[in-house]
Image 1 (cartoon, rainbow, N blue to C red):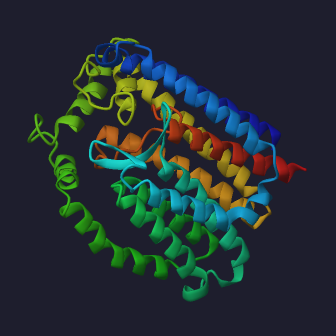
Image 2: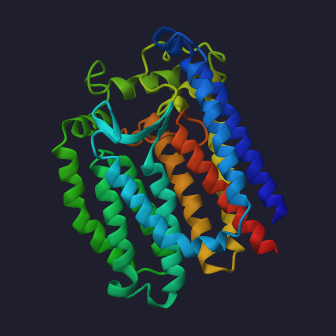
Image 3: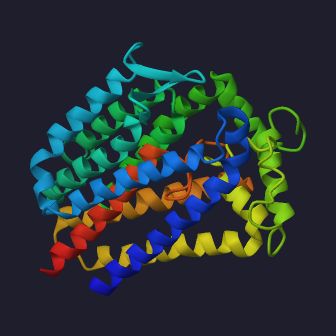
Length: 362
């Protein structure tokens, strides 16, 4: 599988390189006007990238099977961080959300760590309970309870997008492991009213749904962000307006270097740029699936499959939000969007995938 590992490393390198270029392009004017330096965000992103590479090399240095011995302690540790981040004075609040720890000049988002941690826990559980996965009490309920605890704490931040993503990752992996579709369906049926309440009872979430359903009815209000995103994509045409020449990033499109960086890619690099990014993610998923298919160790198989699902879903959701296929969720585009915690843990996940492949070759 060495050639597959090399191809995945090359694909991720291309995505990271695109991210560096587009973060500088999409944030330079804003950073200069608000922070006095047009390289502010790209410099921080490069710092996060260095940290991500160091942690990824560390992940590659040990046998991934050793993670099984720390799966439960790691889960408990992450749950503690998710509780601590909600405490005023410990967690950092920004724009009404309390999702970060501030460590010097760096911000750490435990919900990004939570996605990888619960994936390790669920993979270990499913590997131990392979013959009991179809049993509701012994095989389905325990990981469901842990998932629910993670999701509740993340919703409290509030961050509904990441909690829904975690639930989707866990349930997909459990289905692949043999969980009954009936159990998953019942869970979805019972959970739907709670999800609707979480949307309806929180005004900004309800506004996002309205903007998704009728984006052009109030382009100066609830539909502003989505309308500007679609204007950016439409303005790019086939070849784009040119790198650095986006008009939408000039205070029209909010979060241009984070959640909506795909729209700026479409505006500056055109359809060719966006299709290239989509094809790179498709190639990553395909090559990752080739690795998972060849893994004989159950823990490694579930973990590898979960990593592919985690990164693939984030890419699909981010791109879907940008083109108006999904309501706005605030999830970054893996390896491309600005965001330290997401970059670090996504690269660690890739390193873990490569680690699994390498150990299987021994």
